[in-house]
Image (cartoon, each protein chain N blue to C red):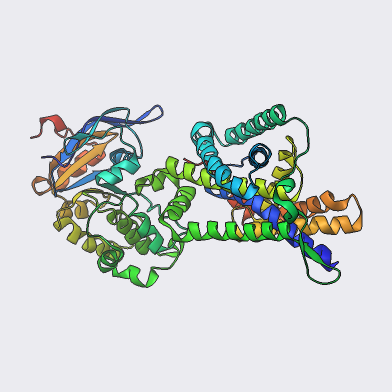
Length: 242
Length: 299
């Protein structure tokens, strides 16, 4: 069974079609990387998956259930959590309060503040600190931890490495490795192609709102991704791929 | 002079009580509820009716009126503010202004121009007082109002700081879109917050009726006092509201000492001095926060 699927999804910002006729699916436990240049529609697509931006046309399916019109807060209860671009922490509240807010939907599961602190040990001394005073790496860890506190089945990660130093990015991805292996289904947006290919099972490359390349990460060469990324050459249309 | 200070502080308790709901709604939903004073008068008239028709003491009447006010708050958010919010920042303010006119005139139609008070229904409590020195005595109703204000503000603070619902209210206030992404139904939270705010308005209405008189058009003045106290206190800070109420009342008391007509003017002077200090003194975050609040209508 597919864990999460989109069919012919179209998302608009007013007149602008940010996502056009996008279809793909993610199997349970799989990690899918969305790549593409700035403005390709990746963030809009993730926000549509999370319900923060309702689509103009098309469908979003969670398992067999059509959740296209379900608002974001209910999707959290159904097991979809988004780590938004730019972290979007509640800056006036402490790290602990941010994490506790992640539990608002009250889904059953074994994520707790203790487990988040085990996963991100750098948060331990900062638990009572205001989120606005954290470093970028600590903020990112808090944002991921807040999403995990809801015990999601599907975790959507939007540019978790943005604005972080390479050493911190290594640490965030090391923490994610455990998650990826634990059977959580993950959709991640990542600018760093090598990193995306190293953690993902599947890669979807977007250009100007459309999917221009979809492939297993193992089968794909950097050249093909680069060509698709910049819209060079004539990559195979997505429909023709198996 | 000391007597004026003490009476001023106690009166400040009333202003803080009526400002509590206004500043709570502003800080949580960025809504300036101009029907605030009219709703307080509405609650006072409900208590008056319960006393007049059924001989119910206002304190027992609150058991009926406060839940009613919670329902009023819920409906206010669901039927009016939620829709008005979608139309921009100014529309909720205009909508509540319209609501205040509707409430005032419905009250006038129903109860006429007579000045009312809840004092007849509480026996001698309305004029009982505690003698502190030979010179100074404090009214029991005034003390009761002050204590109620402190308790209400304290409970609001505890609610916001330590309960999951309170955290959800703060999260929704800061960023409604992201609150949705962590599973919070921002619309429901806003309705709950409005219901809580309007319950405090019910208490303020009771305090108004017990300590003084009111008529159908008394809401405007109550709104003005609440607004001044909230702004002096820093709009949105719980203990600041208590401080703001006391500062306003002390200004009024001081004004009255200087000239018989100085009561209201003294309060306005304090309000304007604090307002301009907040706007123009270096290091003040008030202007930035105000701009941020106006730029970001609640979700």
